[in-house]
Image (cartoon, rainbow, N blue to C red; front, side, top):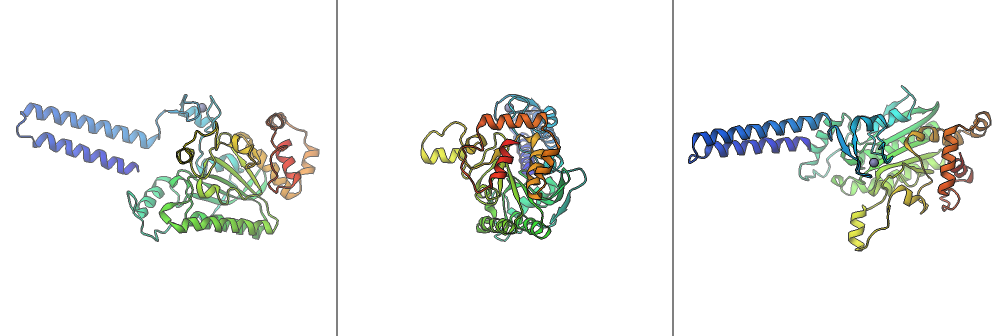
Length: 362
Ligand SMILES: [Zn+2]
């Protein structure tokens, strides 16, 4: 996308240049002035472009939740959580890995699988070209990063959707990698931890992308049959075919605060229904009261919470609890859960009671 912008800037420069020199009726001074102006515009455009490339969004950015201006460095230091309103910005997959798994424990799997342009689909640019550009920009071959890792010493298979790669959309490769990750977990008796941030199915792949919904669900179903646990953390934004498939069928479904989760976007729904939507519609806090989520966990508590949930799978939870007294963070989290009333009035999603207790009371 950035490259096409550059092309536009250059072509504009060219037309402006031609316009100035080609006008025979203009005096020489006017032509020179126009040329200078054109060159200045070109310089500015190049400067803007290079700044944008080096530091997307500039030094400051506007929080989409509270509209306050935030210093980018401050936001990054806070793990991309707005220091003013605690809105959780989308985290790139590699940064998520860093904050989630034990250092040097990640062993990437299936990183070489590449997307195919079976339909030879042409959008504003051909799909194959779009993929090539995205691969170059992100340094990874597809929108899902998966592998084996350890979370506070517990072995897991992790799969993380990267919103930077074509909006975290699910095409054939994403579906295949989720299925393969589940198969590895089943073979090795490991739990699966999935993080989602996605715009849905990848429309460039047509019906093939929609088929991934069934494929990923059946892979998780096979995993569940062997008694392995799956946890999904929906982060901002998780929409479309991803919400409607593997993200929602995991044993435990968590979300980050303020995450937009839904099938169609709120604007589309409002336009279709011709009605004003309720406040906070499709946000995690709205959905937890509808029974779609098991809990909302702030980013800085996720690692610890997932580790404790994994203890249920390993059967070590009780031992660990009796040995370690509750920490200050645990008590604060417990207070929040009790205050929000979750875990008591939400519909049972088939999660065993002991797990629900683990989510809401610890
Ligand atoms: Zn904010």
